[in-house]
Length: 369
Ligand code: NAD
Image (cartoon, rainbow, N blue to C red):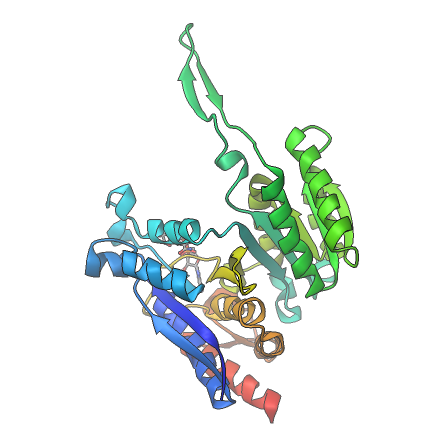
C-alpha cells in the first residue's frame, strides 16, 4: 500500500467532529483503494479547554509542527463565551496559524452548476465559477506599527494604523500565487492600489520581478483593488488566481464567497514557508464556524470540510487526481439533488450529515467502477 503521508486531525467543537467524521470515511475509502493516509488525532478549542484548561496544549502544538499538515474542523460555542481572552477556543486556532507561520490564506470560490441559483448573481455569470483568492495573512495594516488611539491636547482623539510590507513578505506570497496558478489555469491577477499607496507600488514591483525571474510561463496581470471588487461582481469568471494583501484580501475573499451563496460549501487553506523537503506547513479548514445551533443534530453540511480535505490532498499530499475525483463526486451528489438543510431547494432530496457522506462514498465508488 502506498503511504501518502501523515496528517493531524483536530475536529474541535460543535459540528466540527460530525463533519470531520465524513472526512474520515473518505480517508477510509482511499485506504481501501491502496492510498493510505496516517491520521493522528487531538483536541483543540473548547474540547481541549474542557480536558486540559487551555484551547491548545504545547503537546498538540508540537505534534502540529512535527506532522506539518493539519485538518481542522471548527471551534467555539456559547459555553465558552465568558472565558478570558487567552482561554477562548478561537485562540487555539489563531495560535496554530501563528506558530506554524501560515502567511498564505487560500480561499477558493467555486460555484457548482447545481447550486448556481443560490448565488446573488445571475446563473450565467457564476455557473462553473472556479477562482482562488490568495490573501497575505500575517502582514499589512492589521499588524503594522505604530498603531493605536491617542488623546490629543485639545481632548480629541487620533487613531493610527500602519500599512507596511517588506519585499521578502511580498516575494513569498507572490511565489505561492504563481505555484498555485501552475496547478490551475496559469493566470495570476495581482491586486493593490499602486495609484495611491506606496505599499501598492512596492507590491506591484516585487510581484512583477518574481514573475519575470521565476515564473515567466504564468500569465500576470495587475489590477487596482477597487476595480477588482467591481470586476468580481461584474464578470467573476475572468479570474483564476487573485493575489492580494491582508486588508484587500479580507474584503475580496468575503465578496467572492458570496458569489457561491452558501457558508456550508466554502473551503479554505493556510500555507507556510517551504521546509527543506519543499513541503509547506499547512492547515485546512472550512470557512464556517462550529454552528452550535445545529450541532449534534445530523444537520451540518460536511461539504466545506470535504472540499478543504480535497485541497489537502492536492497541496500537501500531491494527490491531485484524488482531489479532482473528490470534487467531481461532490458535484455529482449535488447534481443528483441531494442537499443538507442549509442548501435545500424545492424539489431536492433532504439528507443529513452522514447521509451526505453516504452519497459521496457512493459517487466515489461509481468513479472507479
Ligand atoms: P457559524 O459559521 O458557526 O454559523 C453561522 C450560521 O451558519 C449558523 O446558523 C449555522 O448553523 C450555519 N452554518 C455554519 N456552518 C454550517 C454547515 N456546515 N452546515 C449548515 N449550516 C452551517 O458562525 P457563528 O454562529 O457566528 O459562530 C458560532 C461559533 O463558531 C462561535 O463560537 C464562533 O466564535 C465560532 N467560529 C469559529 C470559526 C472557526 O473555527 N474557524 C469560524 C467562525 C466562527
